[in-house]
Image (cartoon, rainbow, N blue to C red; front, side):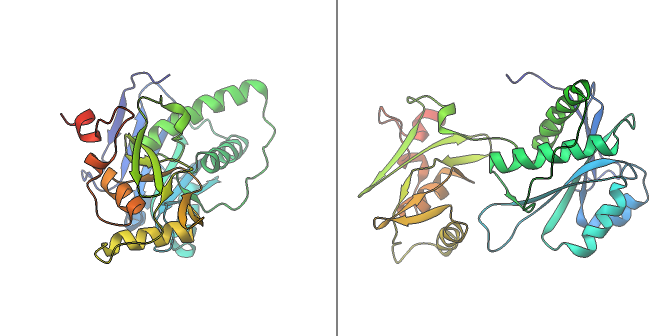
Length: 280
């Protein structure tokens, strides 16, 4: 169950769009968010010269989901510099280290293992790690401590705007809360969540778009097809997995193949629109 948390975010150069150092005040893990263009700046500081686990975030023109790469290193600054030279996709890095320098190689190997496994399971991001590394041996007591650290990592990532491990599932909501959009020969189900609007696996979408359909909707539908998030089944498209859109209207537009006001099109089982439920 979620509980209140106090998170401190420090801006070392004073800019809210630059490096951020975030921590839950009573936990041992802290996170350092580094925009790619701030590698030189962070090199002048000591935070990343440490053992840790890191996340690289970016996007691709060909993929419908944002991308994450997860790794671990004994010197995270040097590893980040290597990725700056060798990996193209990323715009932000977030590094997780121990405030008391308690992490060892075994600790970060374990955190890397569980992070990749849970990122793939949550399926919110396209994971650049093609395989899940083997789980290293850790003692039972150490594993308990690392799982606690991983809980902190999840909270810090979401706070900084990267909900890699936040699962969305139709099973999490009641039938009364479920929202439905009906079109000719199709039906889609979804829900308004903290960071957008999710259309659930098994929903249908029209295969064809109207001539006036905006290019951004057509491009997004093509990305969803290329990523196999939707597939053609019996003359329509079928969502093969849950997918989070940035708004109810974008979700409705993809489902119907035309521009639409999602706030009035998505309705609950009693016929009340999303607009009536959430804005009036």
